[in-house]
Length: 331
Image (cartoon, rainbow, N blue to C red):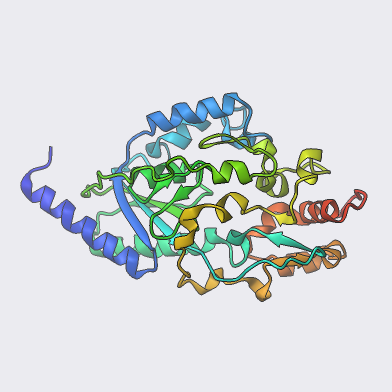
């Protein structure tokens, strides 16, 4: 039980941390207790039981990750001293558009610039370093997607937005074009208790627009039917027929469900220049990509989110768009 002095100190610390997070460039920030995500755990287990994770076996409990569910839903597994979770969101929207050239493949907006793991992670590390300078007893852990944290669940808890029917976080100020990260701290801080109401209402545009029917129901995505999953996470030699037939020009990822969302009419251009398209490319010329060597690939996609798919995956996706036969690619 905190006394009044401790409460006042926790409130002052929280306000200072939020202010500095915004000074570092984060657009939204909230603070919540480092408690287990019990309701979210139930939904995760149901989603996994339906096999909607596909090849992403690292999401489920398995011999390599026997405590995976606990790790994903309890922040104190990562950092036993955690008392507070600082949740941040960073806008990545830029005003560029895709080309309509059928000889090129579209890149998901999140992957146009530098890898968000690097950008968000760097800002969080700077925030943690600053907090340690202010309060010497501080210990903390930076989390940015690589760590098994349920980022969207924490953002909802912290009041940054709500979970849209496409399962992405939607914010009132930046739509869904945001990256999320967390900072686990051993400090007692004042917590945000207000959560953003669900503003999707009766809208089902994202569900109706998905060309592969990947949104099984509101807020439940079957990854095995998702263009983003197939073109980024899957390591299959060929894209599934139902994906290739409805690829809609996407080479890496897919933004269809976000593009049709009415809340993304309120987007604002990011102030983070590292999210600007590399080489001014929002799409890639398919034939050039098919001829790309491993050395050229390594140079072009260094510190880019697109390295996730590897050269073999990108060329597989390009062949599907070109309707070319599958070949073995040497990495």
